[in-house]
Length: 473
Image (cartoon, rainbow, N blue to C red):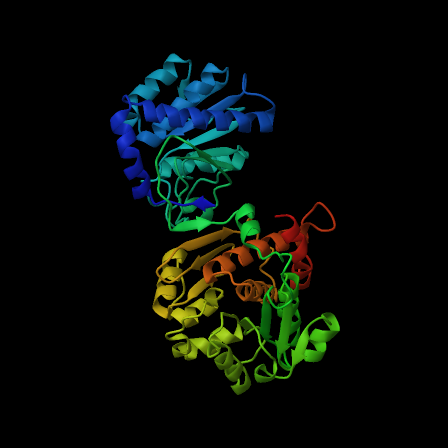
């Protein structure tokens, strides 16, 4: 599990180390890790370090010092090292002296033949876009196609939100120290590498699952399980207008290894034609016993849809609500007042705005937290980085890496997967986070199948790869 920390938490953890170590030792420790990562990147891209040309773009303060020390270490390994000093009067003096003593050169622009640029402009204390002189340098770097390794965060990117408001660095690799920051999940940081510098950090309330975390939580039948003990998922989805939503949502619950799936609604014939193992009923009251409800995709917002949503929320069972269910809920938020059973809402940005009264804005984590706290439910805000907030609890981030899941009907699949996990007994936040992880992986697998080159995908193809995604955990 990956934990994310604020800049203040990192600085607080650094303080005792800075007090106990000789002056500059912690910076050199970080810079050594940075130099190792850069050397690895050079080997991957060019086949070696010696004889390769690198250039550090150096700002004031410790971030620039890290970049200069790393360039110094690489210079000692035979790389041709240059540095552009954006603010010469405030350059880290000891790092600059070591750099020049090792044979590094101070230059005015990126030298011809440079294989890699180090972004040491600003670190986690910086804010706002690149200043004009730095923006000019990195515009030329981008135009030349030279890869950039960012120190701690890509300069010009907000450390807490990953938002950019103007010129910023586009990094192929970001090397950070001690602990990950929210930007490393929320922003475009390229590949992120974490260097251990000895910080003692507590568990964070902002985390993301990796494959091992999902595999450890995903329900697997034991020797004494039967179809009922593995989780019975109820699906309230689809309508005469949108029967496909029922097919997708129900199929996802089947693929996510529910012991049994019960469908209730008007699309029973279409559902059974695709998933004959499903038990179908015309309405929720006739569906039989379930352990969680997935409600909303293609349901419609008329009285029938509202009645289905009310039935699910009044059942006292875990519920995941999506699509039309969210539209109804936005008009009647009192339906979730005082709910004690696990409740997960899965809005995209437009649905979020209807529920919250305003769009999520730049601070998607803060906005999702506020809505979860206000409604007293778990909120999953869809996006390239899915944000999941539990009321008064942790936040889960799920970077998809690509946007293959951004296709019609994809949310119906996610709803079915989360419903199956709730039926199996997973807590709301973990069910949403694990479901989002597998859904994103299935979308990426669908895009690369059958060939090596990504191709446009669809919700049906994502559904078809849910089991493959599970097998790859």
